[in-house]
Length: 135
Image (cartoon, rainbow, N blue to C red; front, side, top):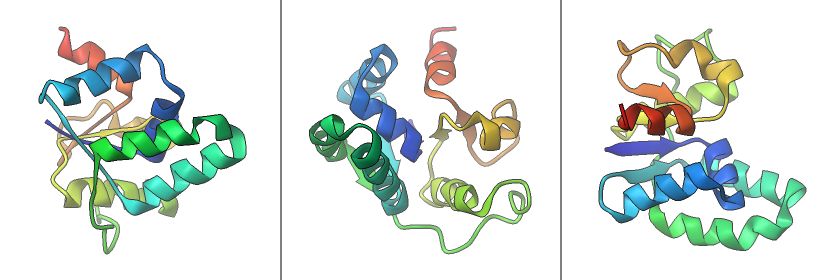
């Protein structure tokens, strides 16, 4: 399973927690691969520097497990006007790299996508995605 990690997921993973430990153990077991865009990396690094600089060392070690993909050249037509511009490229990058799932904590902007299974990929929070695996 190919998982695209939004900046807020990378940020949260650097802080740690049970869900992120479980997520990374799936990667270690070969059940998932992680990818993200350079923009998500920059955003996660910038936000950690401002809010939680103590987690920067852990952030850098996480990047060893995450494949960087090319940024999307343009937003997807079906998402235009439904997402802010700075979030539309996240979806486009996830679709463009062949991700099965976009993991994000941004329910405000991506919430309308989280219950749909008719899109080119599923959009879920980490917790909801992990809970779905155990059902």
